[in-house]
View (cartoon, rainbow, N blue to C red):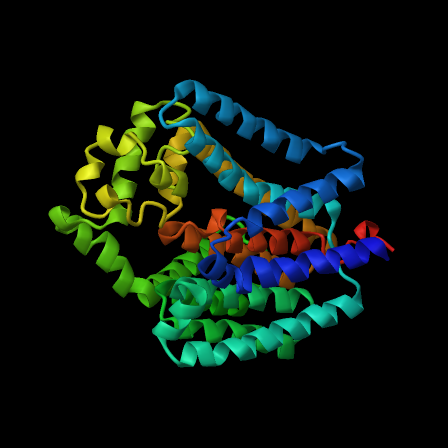
Length: 390
C-alpha cells in the first residue's frame, strides 16, 4: 500500500508541479529545479527498492555520464560550473527513465481512475487558455510550445490510465487536438503522424517494401503539415545565409565541432544548450558564432536538441541512437510477450514525439521531456504485475 501511494504521488506531483504549473512557478518565484528534484527522488526511490544495487542498464548509463564528466573537466572547454550544470541537465531524462522502468512504477485501478480524471479536468481548464489566444498561453505557460507539449503529455497519461477502447482513444485524440490551439507546427506534425500511425500500422515495423512505402507516405504527410515552419527555418534561412536563424546555424556548426573534437566532442556545457548560454561558451568565439545577432546575444542557443549531441562527439551520437535502438528492442519484446499492438503504437509515438521535438526544441532535457520518459517507462512495464507493490 505504501509503494502504491508513493507511485501515485510521484506521478501526480510530477504532472502538476513538473509540467502543468512548472513555467508558472518559474515565472512567479524563479524556481526552476522541480524536475531535478523529482529525478533525484526517483533515483532515491530506485535505490531504496533495490537496496542500493543498481542494475546493469542504469549502472552503464551512469558510468558513461561520469566518463564524459571527467573528460569535460579535463578538456576544460568551458568553466567547471557550466560542465556540472549541463551534466545534471543531460543525465536527468535517462535517470528518470531507468528509475521508473526498473522500479516498475504502476498504478492500481483506483489510482488510474484518479489520474485519468485529473487529466480530463486539466484539459478542460486549458481549453479557454488556448481559445483566448497566444498572449494568454504565454502569460500562463511561458511559451505556446509548452502548452502543446503539456496537452500531448496529458493525452498519453490519460490513455496509460484507461482501458484501450475506441472511446478512450478518441478522448486521447481530443486532448491532443486542444494542443493545436498553440498554433505550433510541431503539434500539427505530431497529430498528423499519430492519426497515420493508428490507422495504418497494425503490426510491428519490419524491413520490407510495404513498410518503406508506408513510412515514406507518413513522412510526406508530416512534412506537408509542418512545411511552412520547416521551410522558414531550414530552407529560406540557409539560402539567405547572412540572415540565417540560430537553429540552422547551430546545426551547421555542429559538424565542425564533431570533426574538430573527434571522437568524444567538446564536453558538457560547451555547445547548443542552456549551460553554454548561461556560462557563454568559448566555442562560440572559436567558430565566430558570437558574431551572429541571435547567438552573439545568447538568444535561442538552447532551442534545439540534436546539435548539442556534437559536444559528445561521434561516440556520443552513436550512444544516443543506440539508446533509442535499445528502447525499440524493449518495445518489440513487450509486443511479442503480450501481442498488444496498442501499446506498441503508443510507445512508437512517444519516440516520434521526441524526434520531432528534438529537431526544433530541447524538450528531451526539460521538465516535459522527463515526464514523457517516465510515461514511456510506465507503458513498457504496463500490466507487469510482478512489479506492482501490494
